[in-house]
Amino acid sequence: MQLIVGRDSLSRGLARIQGVLNRKATMPVLSNALLEARPDGSLRVAATDLDVTFDGVMPARVERPGRITVDGKRLYEIARNLPGEEVSITVDEDQRVLLRCRTSEFVLNGLSADGYPALPSARGIELLPVDGGALRELIERTQFSVSTEESRPNLNGVYFQCLGDSKVRMVSTDGHRLSLGERDVSRGGVVPERDGVIIPRKGIQEVRRLLDEVGPEVDFGFLENNLVLRAGDLHLFVRLIDAAFPDYTLVIPRSTERKVILDRLPFLSAIKRISILASERTHGMRLELTRSKLTLVSDNPDLGKAKEDIEIDGYDGSDLTIAFNSKYVMEILSVLSGEKVALLLNEALSPGLIREHQNEGYLFVVMPMRL
Image 1 (tube, rainbow, N blue to C red):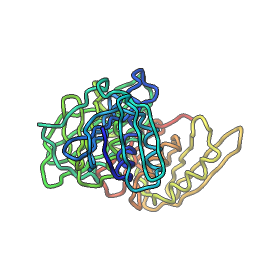
Image 2: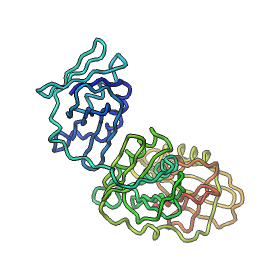
Image 3: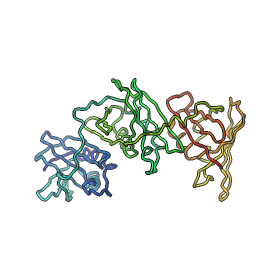
Image 4: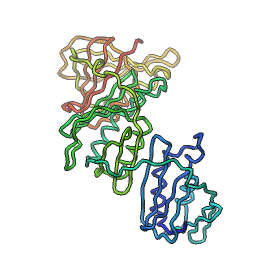
């Protein structure tokens, strides 16, 4: 195998797969990148951990086609630090990979591609054009509340549902909070209705990284138990979680007795200040609501007490004291972009609801605490 490829193209291709490479895998080859020099004048760079697969191609001058696998992280570190614009890659009969760039030369021990797992292919499946920007916003506003408890695999991902009329819903929950978003993701085509699936935490992270890079023009579809995204010559395959997502509608309040409209950024800043003295274990804070003001309180016997008043207008409900995890509320306010948010409450031990003011596309539920 012998070829010449642009250093920047090679670095970008290797950068994409870094989150997929698995150095702790029981199969050592899963820490390797697959390089394939093709007769059509392209270099394929791929990697998989058997759950997430990146598969992309880039232009190259191929002198001798072939396939090899090599340590993906080491190869990336070498490629991104090479001094020239083009890299010569040669593989000898002993599976050694020789890289030359100007005066630099590196030799890496490779492994035969014959032992690399078979990669999924998108040939023959229908992929629909969607707005990658809308998908990215949905992910940003839901992925932070995915559960990290491995004992609850059905909560270890984002629930993804096609509602019909090109609308997509994403939901995540860890049992203490819930995030839900809906957006029209159409981009010149129609996304039909489809039953919901669960995209695992790692997979949704890689989807977001891809969308950060490629922008709005992406296509998506399903291949057996995989979500497939395509952007140009790059494909991402994510194995879905084979489990049933819980009925999340049961924890969303059907109605609320109290509604407060707050300026988002001042509200966020106030919580950041009072949370300095909140318990490091519970992050608890009290919200004391009256007709004229909202008072935020954190009371830590080991450190001290913090209190801040926020003046409010237009609230005519009854007084209420309720406690929430300050970290959860801050994470919600941080992913929103509107100037104002609506805080919707019932009783002290009932879930609280946060929405962007005059935006029905997103809602966030936070369970109350006992302080």
